Amino acid sequence: MEISELGEFGLIKHLTKDIKPVNKSTIKGVGDDCAVMQYAEGKRVLMTTDMLMEGVHFDLQYTPMKHLGYKSAIVNISDIIAMNGNPTQMVVSIAIGKRFKVEDLEDFYAGLQLACENYHVDLVGGDTTSSMTGLAISITCLGEAAPEDIVMRNGAKVNDLVCVSGDLGAAYMGLQLLEREKAVFNEQYREAKQKGQDIEPAQPDFSGREYLLERILKPQARQDIIQRLKEAGIRPTSMMDISDGLSSEMMHICEQSGVGCRLYEEKIPLDYQTAATAEEFNMNVTTCAMNGGEDYELLFTVPLTDNEVVSKIEDVKVIGYITAETEGKKLICRDGSEFDLKAQGWNPLKGNE
Ligand code: ADP
Ligand code: MG
Image 1 (spheres, rainbow, N blue to C red):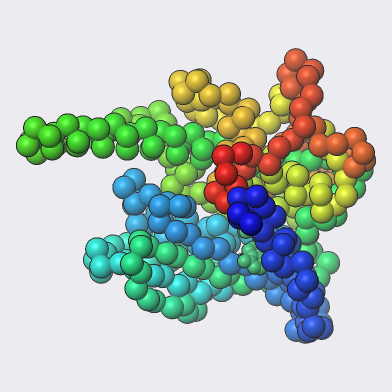
Image 2 (tube, protein in one colour):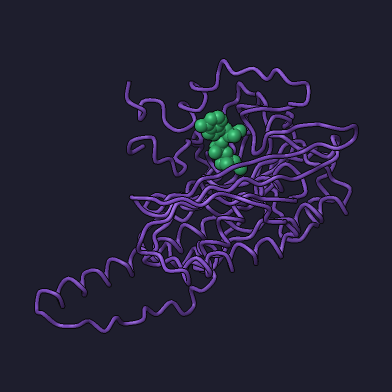
């Protein structure tokens, strides 16, 4: 059977369906942003792991090593935060090829350490080996939380409000910009080579688009949002971070909570640069926001009774509400038309969907 028939999530489900935890300390296994363990009364341990492969998750032609280090740490830290937890330690494993210099790896570690510093995480170990196929990075991050604080994907209730932090689609548009410049550069390089000339690469002009580049190259984990929710006395009923795109993540929450949803296109938070760049690329900006991914914003649900309080929290927007499962998972467009959400998230294991 071809893996593409199942896709990433289908494959994970298929491989793990018979796995049953046998240790009392395992509270939650496969299926959420983190696994949850409890070794002592009153405190739970969160664990998440992510692997980043050169050519699949990052392109070193336009990703500085320092940014790569920073982002590799953030994608893990973000999963701990998405459980309403506190990140504490990480281990970092790398497989490196011959073309890397010590200085490259120093830059990578400078980025890793900066992220660890910003989020108060200790880098406590890892593994180093060689690779024949490019750089591979594997990071595992631990965190902690009180049992009553942990928020999973499965707690959304009918009538809850659906909220997102920040704005969406910017990382995806940043990636489009970088890919376009890469194509331009490679074409110039090819032509120059044909003529036997040396090429003086023109520095691409990204002025006015800095925000988009920052979103793709230096994302942040939204610990500040967790803090604001706590201060406002709000405990989300479900939560996850948006790595694959709003549409796909909303479907995870709905499926695991056994509910449906109605999201409103007009409410989806967008930055001006995202909208302007989408127009320039002839792309539908809503599609970018729904399916773009890599924004690492938080998607969460809160009880309807928190409406007034949550609406006042800076950088949080209510974009819809939870319905009964039978009502489906819908996006309501500006003109009133309704569409079913689709998991078009970034999913390299699933053909060309
Ligand atoms: P995220 O995007 O938040 O990092 P994923 O979509 O990668 O989460 O993973 C979803 C769930 O499936 C997580 O609980 C993760 O631990 C689990 N998972 C992913 N790959 C595997 C695997 N190869 N074996 C077991 N569990 C896996
Ligand atoms: Mg996640």
